[in-house]
Image (tube, rainbow, N blue to C red; front, side, top):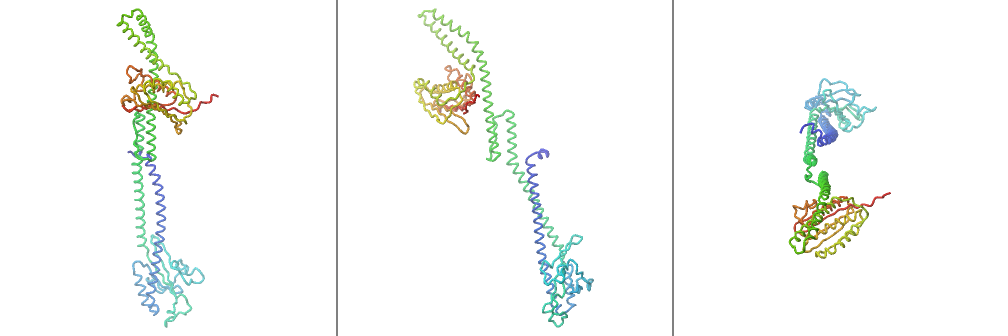
Amino acid sequence: MTLKRFKNRIACKLLIYVGCILLVLCGLYLIWANHILEEDYIREVTVGGVRLSDSIKQSFRFAMLRNDREATHHSVNAVGELEEIEALRIYNKDGVIVFSSDDSELNKNVDMSAESCAPCHQHSKPSPHLTDFERVNIYHHPNGDRTLLLINPIYNDPDCYRSPCHVHPSDQRVLGVMDLSLSLKMHDQQIRIYRWKMIIFVGGLLAAVSMVIVMFFRHVVSRRIDDLIEGTYKIASGDLSHRLPIKNPDEIGTLAKSFNHMTQTLAETRNQLHQSERLASLGRMSAGIAHEINNPLTGIMMYASMLADSFSESDDQINEHIEVILREAKRCREIIKGLLDFARQSEPNMSLNSLNKIISNTLKFLTGQIQAANINIHLELDDRLPELMLDDVQIQQVILNIILNAIDAMPDGGTIRIMTQYDASKNKAMLTVEDTGEGIDAEILPNIFEPFFSTKGTAGTGLGLAVSWGIIQQHGGSIDVQSEKHSGTRFFIYLPVKVEKDKS
């Protein structure tokens, strides 16, 4: 697949939209996580630094109580040599550096207005007590490194002013301050590594989610859409037998089901159009043939009758031949009459009629034939069926044709079941005529509505069902048949339910 084609696919657009959303969400998550990480990191370093500062100050306590300046000086230098400690200073209440890990700072004054002194000297008097976080400041160097500065006041405890060597009065609260500078370089390096790990993890997660979306869309959506596109091309090329597989009952499955229903409807509509075109063509041809044959056939029948009158009754063989001529000529005339009726199918004269009443009247007309053929009639007529816009004469002709065919299919007697139903959801009436006859072979079943097709041999013209099909089509309905050999035949007629239009 080319890049240009991929850009035009829904999968690419979905990937871009979802990717942008995930990118924004992951970015916000990284910012939030980095903020939380920084706060936890500073909190942890601060607590650890304060504890370290208190421990260092406590280690100097004995030497300071003895005023052993040399021991204190060596201890400060020893602590200052540790890797993470950048500087350690102790200065008195006047801001003069008394001890320092850097000898060049000794006896120098500290700027009381500096940021590191603000927690104690931001008011007119030094603060008597500092919290752990007030004792901490973080400084940024030009090279990007950071330093944690901790100040630790040295208070005038009772052990101090009670010592024999102590020179400070007991009412002096603070004797001095120890500040400790810790390098955060190693900690910052670790946190940078952790940040990169988070970025790589989130990036990998974003890529994995994107791949899952693409694969899911490709297997669940894209391929099925490709099947739908391929199906439309096949339908456009005329292959109305193509059907889409319905794999899942989701939206695409529903679309495939609708596509298959549409294809089936198109196939039925095409067959109906072909049937209508064939019937129209055959009707025009039949009318011409009937008119051409009718005149000479009338002459044949007239001269055959005259010839029969000219022979005496003793000429049995000649009279028998003449009777054959007259009988076959009458049969040809019946066929021609059927052709003319088929060719002259007129527009139905619509009016509101009861389908149930038309069925009852048709059965009354056939009472003699039904009884003679030893046929049982079972009626299941739906009383809810409303009146329909019908041509009662044409619909009676359809019912008559179907019942006569059913009687012919049961020479030894049988049962005809006639049912009407009203489907309110589709606003249609359904008429079912079912017999217990021999049925129709599956091979010839699709041809029974073809003109001149008959299963009765010379006993039928093959036009009854073709005429019936045309009548039902003119009424806006449809006719269908189901049959199996030795299992009877069922005709289904569907007619629309509609009221008569207001002529005003």
